[in-house]
Image (cartoon, rainbow, N blue to C red; front, top):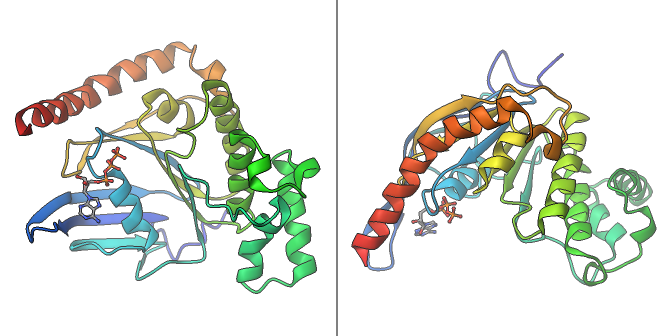
Length: 273
Ligand SMILES: Nc1ncnc2c1ncn2[C@@H]1O[C@H](COP(=O)(O)OP(=O)(O)OP(=O)(O)O)[C@@H](O)[C@H]1O
C-alpha cells in the first residue's frame, strides 16, 4: 500500500520543535520545548497531558496555522508552510455555518475546492449516509442535537478525504453515551480511510480506546515524556474494549506517567497564586 508520502517519510513529523509566545507585557512564554514526534501513515495517535501544557499548540503547528519558533514540522516529508488541503480538523466547537442546511454545510468544503456542484452534492450525500444523517440533510444546525452536529462535523471533514486528521477534544462537549457512539463512528470512518490521526484529549480512557499509541506530554512547556503502544486489537468498540485486561493494565501504566505531570501542573498553579 502506498502511503502517499515520498519514500518512507512519516505522515507527520516534528523535529526539535519549540514554540515561544510573546505575552502582552512583552515577555516570552515557552509553550512547546524541543519536541520530537513522528506519526506513521494511517496511524492513530492520541496526545494526553496536563491542562495548558501545550497540546493544542502542537496541533496548530502541524495544521500550518502557526509556525514553530525553532525546529521543523513536516507532512509527508515536506516542510509545512501553511494550511494544506489534505489536512482535516475537528475541534471542540462545531465549525458549521448556522445559516446553511446540513447538506449545504457538508458540500461547502468541496465547493470551495472547486468540485462541481452536482459532484459535491453527491459526495456530501454519501458522507451524510455514512454518518446516519440522510433524513436530516435539509435541517439547519440549530435543529440538531449535539451528537448530530458532531456527525455533520465528521462528514464535513471526511468528505475532504483528508490524509491527516487533527482532532482537538472533538467530543468533550458531548454526554458520555453520545461520546462513546461518536468514538465508535470515528473509528469506523477512520478505518475506511487512510488518514493519520492526531487526537488531543484530557480523557485517558478515550485516548487508549481509540489510539494505536498514546503520547504523554510533560507539564508545560510541552515535550514528549513517553510514548505508549496500546496493543489492543482492532476493530474496536470503545465500551467493550474498556473491559479488557490489557486496557486496565495500560491505563494504570500511562496514568503513573501522566499523573506526575498533572501533579506538577497543579503544584505550580498553587504556588503561582
Ligand atoms: N497565542 C498565544 N499567545 C500567548 N500564549 C499562548 C497562546 N496560545 C497558547 N498560549 C499559552 O501556551 C500554553 C499552552 O497552551 P495550549 O492551548 O497549547 O495548551 P493545552 O495543553 O492545549 O491546554 P488545555 O489542555 O487546557 O486545552 C498555555 O499556557 C497558553 O496560555
